[in-house]
Every structure is written in structure tokens, then in C-alpha cells.
Length: 587
Image (cartoon, rainbow, N blue to C red; front, side, top):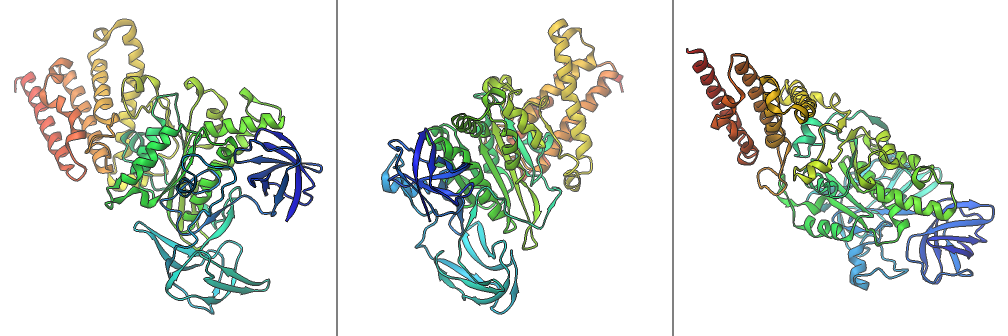
């Protein structure tokens, strides 16, 4: 243990001396309240610490203590359904102790030390084991089977292993003997948040993260193990989009990080998630969710570390072979915390006052996503979806620009769409994805025409965007009939496919089969309509059919398990369009 003293206090930045031997990112307890801090810089014999709690009243001469271990999180059973702050303090336990406000210096264990977990071993003593070996299982929640694995860097002979029974996270569960001595393992372990947990190899993602949101799954899909950004100005629906993804995506585990968001938004999350039922299994969604709440009124430094805490928890479950989705809302607030801390340190500012290492920190975060072969030999993946809040919706600002360098999926939110109450307000013009060909084979198993249908409808939307510029100058009636019909089909696509109501009991989630059939119906309508226009019919003749107006209602009238009704509609639509053609030709 090292002991020093404070010589300077500048907001959350504290300078101390006499801590010889301390290392970067070590934890320090500062002042009479033992406030948690982290070493962020060493300048000769001065140690610079960022304090993660309210340090009002801290003054030069106060004592600083360090046990020379890095900022770490406790990993073990009990993380699921828990709510933490940025440094893994359990907020529910804190509220029971001190009410609505977190008292200075309060320390509670991240996991319940007294709760007993039923452990079922899968090995016997005497066998050779290595890092990543699965020793046994615990049913952590009805939806999550917790696998107890040997931590990285440990191998040897399994000398002892307890039998089936109930144990706390502090009980000794196994021992491993090797040349360095004997390692004693428990159900929980600490891991430094700024160090990525190791894996064997990183693989190319190939399975889509199905979200049930049509514009994402069909037009701008993301693979499991991929990275995505959701940039948008105030009120465009970033948080609501992430809520929808957390509710409906097909990941096994959800890690939701509320990083610097308003308290009322996090309150909605904390009150809604325990009530939400996962429709795939009928269980509460909270039973596969870990939440980190670090709102805008909490200390700024804890906001900076919260995303590392969240992704470390995600890596822990990834190592068990799970698919984990990390929702970071928002990385702009995290970057603002970096900016505030760097200014107090006297760093030379770069663009818009952000530190010059902003891009490096963003890269360190997003590169921890990916599909990997874990140390145990199973496949596990982490998908990171980060919201970005550019001031005034300006996508040229530094956080958005740097983020686009490290993500392969970009869901740009449009203020015009949001003002028109078109949700999700993801712009089909400004958004893009680089995962189309990675997941193409998965979709082709559903239907071999998926990519060609998707691309053709996307081209219709792009042509509509170009034609809208002409309409503003000359009006719709001045366009050729074919171009007028393209505008009609594009508008139908926006209303019947792209727009989705999160509160509609049927439309809130759309299965892949339903998505493809809806899109195929729209494209068939386009092909038939173009054919009829070439025979001399007007656009009004086609749109006057009652069956055409029914297309917009299919999304909210046809359940996911009754998609054959879309096929029936398609046949009826084709029949009536054929009748128009027959009447036109006099057959």
C-alpha cells in the first residue's frame, strides 16, 4: 500500500505527491471520505488523479492511499438484472442505504456477497486445464446460464473442485497447481476495465443482428459482432431507437450504457425494462440485461469510464459463448467528459476543444466489438451500437466524423423525418452499411432474391430523392408518367415499409419473413405498374384501385406468424392489375 498527500485540487483533477511506485490507471482513495479515483498521468514525482465522485471539500494536505491495482470490475454471477453507475457501484443498493442522492465515499460490493448460487461442476479434479476451460455452470437467471471459466493466464492441473452445491462468490471453488504455485479460484474475479479480455482469434461476422426494425434489417443491416453509430440532433429519436434495438434484437445479452444522458430518459429505461416481456421466450427482458446509468448530473469522470465498464461486462459474457449487444447512449456525452478533463489537465485542444487523442479513445472502444473464438473454443460476439449527439445535427463535428472511421454501419437520423413523425427517422439517403455482403448468405437461405429485391427498391428510393428536386421546380404533373409512378411507389415504400410504430402490438417487431414479403409485394406492384403505364394507362388509373391502398395497412394487420396473408394479398393485387390491363387492351 502506498500513501501520499494532495497538493492541488482542480475540479475532479487532483494532484498528489509521495506515491512512488504507483502506475498508470491504478486506483487511489482520496481524502477523508476515501473517494475513488484513477491515476491518469505521472509527471516526475507528481501523480495526477481523476476522482470519480463529488470531491467538494477536498483540500491540499489530505491523504491519498493506493493499493496499486488498476480500476477493475467484479465479474461473476449476479450481474444480470443489476443497475450500476460508471464505476460498478450498485445503484439499487445505494438507494436503499442513502436514498435519492449518492453520498460521498459510499462503497458497496458490486455483487451480493451473501447470496448462494447453485454450482454444478462439469469436470473432476486431477485433469489438465487451461485458460478458458469451463469448470461448471450456474443458472444466473431463467434466461442466462452462467458458465464458470478459468480466467486468462491461468493453467495447470485442477487439484480440487467442489461438488454440486450452493456457494457464495467468496467461497473457494477450485485450485490449480502449476510451476508458479497454486491458484485458488472463486465464482467471481476482478478484471481491469481498460484492458480487453483475450480470445483465440477474431472472425469475420456473417450472421445479422436481427432487430425487427425493417429499415435496419433490410436496408442497413448490421452483423452480430459489428459496430454501428446512430447520429442525430436533439429530438430525432436516438434513445428511442436504441430502446427498440435493446428490446427486440436477437442478442443473448444486452448491456445498456446510459452515458451522460438526461435522468428522465434513464428513468424511462429503468422503469420500462423490468416490465417488458421478451416475446421470444415470454420472460422479462431484464433477465438478460445489465444496465449502467451514469446520467448528466453524476460526476463527469465516471461518465468517461462507464463505456469501458460496460464493454468489459460484455466481454465477460462473450467469453461464455454468448452474443452480446452493447448500447452506448451517447458517446458524444462521453467525449464531452474527455474534453472537460483534458482542459483541466492543460492539454492542447484540437478540433472544437476536444483532445487530440479523441480518435484513439474511440478506436479503443469500438475495436472491442467483434465475433471471436473464445479461449474455451466457442464462438462469442459483441455488437457495439453507439449513439452520437452532434450539436445542431451537424454531422461534420469531430465526434461524428471520427466515429465514422471506426464503424461499418451508419444510421443517420433525419430531423425532417422526425418532425413529420416518421419513425424510425433513419435517413435512407445519408445512411449506409458495409455488412451487406457479409450477411448475404444468411438472407439467401430465407430467399435467394433478397439482395436483388433490396437493391432494386433502394434504387427506387434514390431515384425518388432525385426526382423530388425536379418536382420543387416544375411540379409533379410536368414529369413523365413513369417518373410520376416512381414517386407513388417510393411514397408507398416509405409508408408501408420504412415507417414503423413501436407502440403497435403487431408492427413493433417485424420478422425477416414478413419484411421480405412486404418488400417483394411493393416491388411486384412497381413492375406491374410500369408495365401497365407502357400500355397507356395513367398513374391515376392504377392508384384508384382500392386494393392498392390496402398495401399500407399490411404491416399492422398481418402478424409475423401469418405471413401467408401477404401472399394472398399479392395474388389479389396482381389479379386486379391484370384486369386493368385486359380492360385497356379490350381483351
